[in-house]
Each structure stands twice: as structure tokens, then as C-alpha cells.
Amino acid sequence: MTAAPAQAPASARPRGSVGAVIALAFIVLAFVYPLGAKTDELAAMTWRQGLLAPLTWGLLLLAAVRALRPTPGWRSTALLLGLALAAAGGFGQLAPALGDAPAGPGFWLALVGCALLAAITLQRCAALGAAGAGADSRAVRWSGLFTAGLFGAWIVFFWQIGVTAFAVPRVLLPAPSFIVHALVDQWPTLLRDFVQTVLKAVLIGWALGCALGFAVGVAIDRLPFLQRGLLPLASLTSTIPLVAVAPIMVMWFGFEWPSKAAVVVLMTFFPILIATLAGLQSAGRLERELMHSYAASYGRTLLDLRLPCAVPFIVSALKINATLALIGAIVAEFFGSPTVGLGFRISTEAARMNMPLVWGAIVVAAVTGSLAYALLVRLERRWAFWHPSVRSR
Image (cartoon, rainbow, N blue to C red; front, side, top):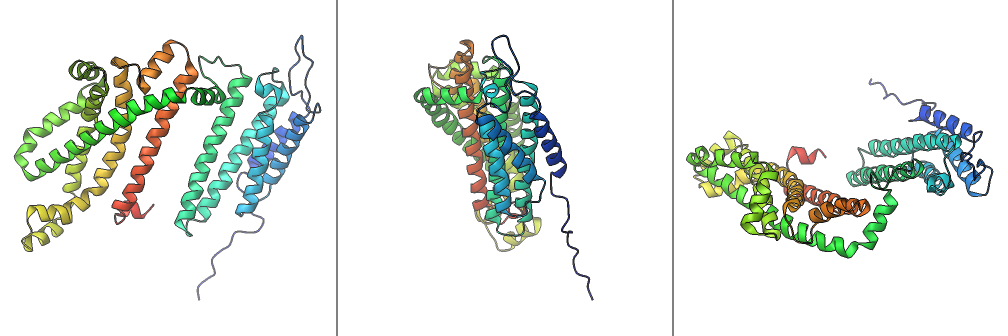
């Protein structure tokens, strides 16, 4: 007779309960201290003034009290998250958070409590995804994406609050609101930069470099004597510093995008070559002997056995090359470019101290790289769905 599986007691302590107690203590203590510091021109601001301050404090208090209790399902977690986000929205509109008044001790205590609540909401959302690991994989995936997006939203929120409350100079670190304003105002300029850097230099250079590396890898695998000649030359290309080869490419191919595409080709050639060779050699010996017993030609063995085994290796190299290509093209534009391009925009606007636009260009590049990586991950799940490394996700 087998024993029944042990169940967690009903009085089990919820995740983040210690943090919830500390957050509650900070929030209650914040009400005692002034929200805004006293100056020669302004009196000390308290939480009782106006409607927004007491409402925000009340939402923080409710969220901390709710965090003391377990949130086993999506509804209870959504309630906690809604209270925390509503409190954060009100907190961001307070005078110290907008930079209209110096922050007082009560503001900083409440900010610590809000940060603890943010960590608790992330922990509870991640726990829901882990609890549903045996359920629908699509729901688990969406739960992970939601948790990641929530983490990014909290980072942006505290970035905005911290930069504004500490009065950080815009040259050092602009607030996210200034970056969004630059993205909205300068989107035609950034769109032209995107086309010049990504759609021309990166995309064409990435395709050419990956295709050339794959072809050379297959050739080396077919003709082993090439390994003694081509492979050392290929490894030599990977050791050339980018800052040294970029000006040479500008002299050879001009200031337009072909010189940047040439740099991208040089950067993406070696990773795909090594991945192709490793993938082709990963086919099992028994499988290759079986194909040989069927009198299969090299081409048939390559298409039916060795290339399918190499797909996970090749896709991994494609993902690495996607980020390398973007970095290489942007850096290459520092050494000579027409009046357009993400690298040109970053270098020129940094010289002008227009840091919001610089960060706007960085955001465009980062989002582009992330989307390219996510697209290749989806393609990997379609092309190599049979591989254990993909099935386990």
C-alpha cells in the first residue's frame, strides 16, 4: 500500500511574506514622516495634503496587507498586482517624484516599501508559472513573458522615480520620459537610421556572412585537406580587432552601407563555420554506417542525416551572429558614415550632449536585437523540434 503524497499545510507561509511584513512596516512608518522636505520657499509636505497623497498611501497599505496572504490563483495575484500598480501610478504623480518638490523621509520610506511590493509581485507571478509547469506549455510560456515584461516595467518605473528624485543630470542618465519623448519627436530620423543600419548593413551582411560560413564549413567537411588551409585563415579573421578592420573597409568600400556590411560578414563568418563543422560531425557513427550500408551518396547522407543533426548548432550560431552583426554595424559607423545610421546618430548626438536621442537610438538597437533573437528562437522550435534541447523547453 503506497502512502498518499504529502500536501502542503493550509497555513503554509506565502511567498514573500517576510518582505510583505517589512514593506508594511516601511509604509506605516512613512506616514509619520513628511512626504516633502521643508525649504525656504516651501513648507514640509505631508501625506494628508490633497487627495492624491493619502490615496496613494492607502493603496500602498492595501497592497502590503494583501501581500501578507497567499495568492494561489490568477485572480488573487491579479488583485495584488492591480493594487501595487495603482499605488505605483499614484506614487509617480507625487510632487517629489515629478521633481516639483524635494523628497522627504516619508517619500523614501514609501519608495522602499513600493520596491518590496514590486519584488513580491514578481515572485508571485513567477510562482504561478512554475506551478503550471505540468499544464499547458503555451500558458507557461505566456506567464514567463508576462513576468519578464512586468520586471521591465518595474525597472523603468524606479529608473524614472530615482533619476527625478535625485535630480540626476540629463547628460549622465536621462529619465525614461525624456527618452520616450525623443523617440516620438525624432521617429522619422530614427526610422531612416534603422533602414540604413539594420535593413541594409546588418541584414545583408548577416545573410552573406552566414551563407559563406556555412558553405565553407560544408566544403571543409567534404574535402578534409581544406581544413589545413582554410580553417587557420578563418580563425585568423575572428582575431582581427573590429576597430582595426572598420576603417580599412571604409577605405575599400566607401562610406555607404557596403563597408559596414563587409564588417558584418567578417564578424559572422567564423561562428557559423565552426558551428557547421561541429554539427556535421555530431551525427552518430552507427547512423553514418547505416547510410553507408544503403550505398547512400555523400549528398544524400548530408541531406538526410548530417544536416538535420547540425540544425541546432547552426541555429545557435545564427542567434549569436544576430547580435554580433548589429554590434559590428553600429561600431563600424563610428569610423566613417554618411549622415544617417544608428552608429552615426549615437556618436554625433553624444558629442552634442543630446543624450535622450542617444538613448533613443540605443533603445531601437536593443529592441531590434531582441526581436531578431526571439524570431530565431521560434524558428529553432520549428526546425529542430525533435532535438532534446528544444523539446525540454
